[in-house]
Length: 152
Image 1 (cartoon, rainbow, N blue to C red):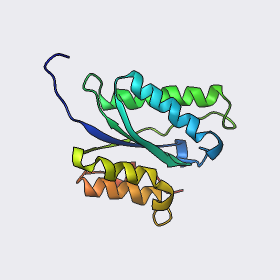
Image 2 (tube, helix red, strand yellow):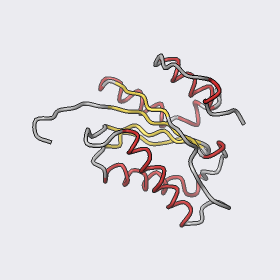
Image 3 (cartoon, rainbow, N blue to C red):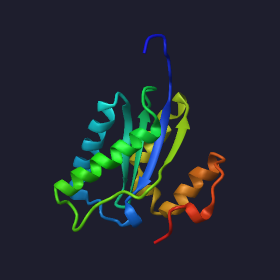
Image 4 (tube, rainbow, N blue to C red):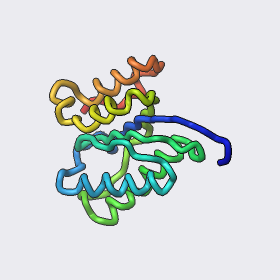
């Protein structure tokens, strides 16, 4: 895109279907590498990726040719297929419908990346739903609690 200049930093969060804790340490790094490849193939830059057994955080520099919703759809579809084809979980794997996407300034990149890379530490004190509500509240996002991810 000639003469198009952007600086778009997006933190994406989504969960395993029914928030089942099935992303195992034995294969999560391979999953992250697979997701990074998907994202890079769509011209976006991965700044950080991490998560817990029941959810994923991805921080990217967004390329303006693709919408966030299309990117998330591609990540979920292709990674679900990869997990299922590699028989990494018993039964059929899928991601829960929906996601969160939050924008940040360039000056916040290190802070957000550090947050993602220290997920284990963060979840000693709060559940995923508490974390997700914190994002929504901090960003002033109006939401209906009945549509939030349910506590398990």
